[in-house]
Image (cartoon, rainbow, N blue to C red):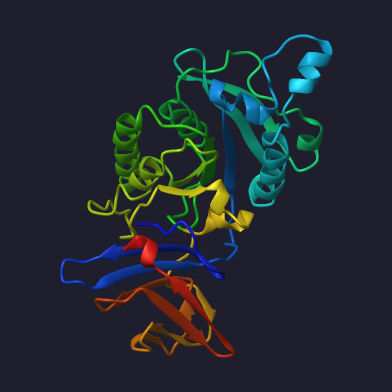
Length: 314
């Protein structure tokens, strides 16, 4: 289980309770990866349930409509996200689209490519050419972006050819189909037919199904697929918007055990029992086990320490 709340400098903490009572931990330290040649895509939910977030009240008529108006909370966030992602894009731009459009939520409306400057003058108010969706289907935008970036240079699972962010406020209706297609895509990556792409799902609002997001995130946990170099292909990551403190969190899985961030350190549980020593350097990706009964761990390093509670994952 991915913990919903982590303390800095951790980007993500996953807790796996074992049958013997031990607790396996996989945690990342938040860093900004050195990305090269990456294409960037941002897909915004265009379903009817998102209207209020785009500032659309649905009321027609002068002062009454103005009084009933709601602020557009999507636009400033999307502009900030595009400005941020464009810094890592190979062409300095981010592809923007709306998904979950049309009555059955199966259509995608392309908006265009934007850089940090051009997005500031672009209204982000939901789909214009297609009607707002009445369903939320993730497979169409997934296929669209994979097709768009299929010829991008392949550089490995920690250097994705493309990085795609999907924003939604509801339940994904075609989760089974999305998982099936993701397996097919991972197999194509393993065979060298398509480049690796990282897919990041952001949930907004109170109606998001967090369990679905976890299921998608962990879909390769028990049945890993590896690329030609033996690296496990982990396509999906996710985060609830309410738990995001920094935009850099979208990159929290683009780290490895080869990336050293601190000269030395060690992991202790709440009883000060040493569970892992990092005498040759603390990596950005930490993997260790805690003994039965542990409810937190502490990363000690020269000059400080940080403690992460894991009780939410037990």
